[in-house]
Length: 291
Image (cartoon, rainbow, N blue to C red; front, side, top):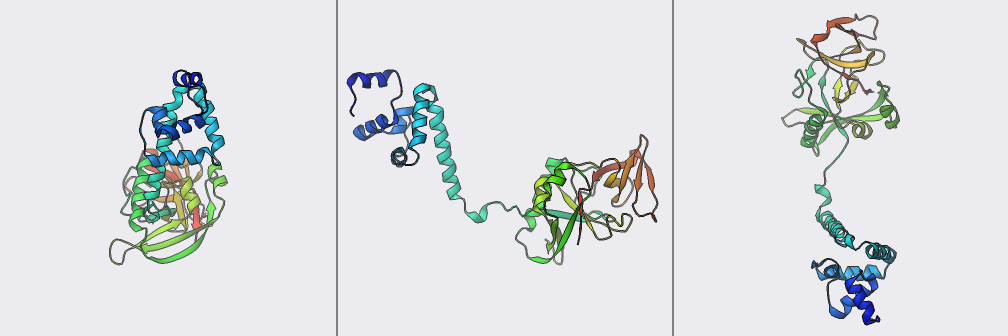
């Protein structure tokens, strides 16, 4: 191996030898490099790969590891375990077929119309927590991924909640309304496709607007985007659910200690005042889409 007996004895008892010496030991004795370092056996194919690395582009990396192990012999086992973990990850990735990787189309479910309530989904007094909402919405999307797209239309996105996250994160002002076949015959399910909104608010959902009480800002047939994690802000546009009311309403929302004022933008419509106890929930309108 080109070293003296005293040097060999020093390596055997006091410090980890340089990687070049370890490889020579492997060549002479046929020993496993991983076994020399940790006492654990690995397949011989892994040994050959390590030999290639020692004299290839990654030799500088191995020299750094050599210095690290020389100064900190106690790190030998953790480093070896980390390398094993990386190898295992690579093996798993190779086994995954591209077609079975999860699809993330950025679809936001349209859950109904404001006048008709959140049909067949969250037509209840209390909204789910954001994490639960993400799971439920994700399951809804998965049911329809891969189904035939019946129709689609381009839309323009307008920001309604002037939150910095939304203003900075929404670079594109375009979205698509997609209609696909549902689980039942003649059933049509709608989704808004906008990856930027989906990435910012993975628990977001959409509603069609009925009526012109919020025109000219939001018009009949527009689509509003909401998130269970973003409550309505004082004086901003929101969607409110009231006790003993079918559906939800889209208005400017202003609260006092005892009451909630639901204020339309259209001057021809009247402001509605309800007791605060009758407000079940109110979410901010993040943005709306005009098709």
